[in-house]
Image (tube, rainbow, N blue to C red):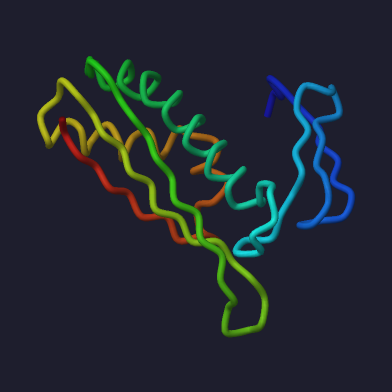
Length: 136
């Protein structure tokens, strides 16, 4: 694989610490879910990244399929839970709203995008990802 881009982040203090992009462009205080402490958690950051990546991959897939949606909107819900083995795993619901296509074409677009998106490829086979498509 030819690497097109690489970034690096450093965390100190885990879920109660601080995470910083090594290029200095973003730094966030971290907070465990439900703690009431100000800050973000890794699941929120993953949801933001997945939503942006998937929404950006939609036009790529649309071009492959020769479809022309007029607009898209992607929301991602990321949950975390404990597995039967005692470890932890993510659970993902991906909601995609497509404008300007039929329901059948919108579903086809979302399914194809799920094959193209790097986050989808990274989670495939080890994280439950459910796709939800709506047409506006």
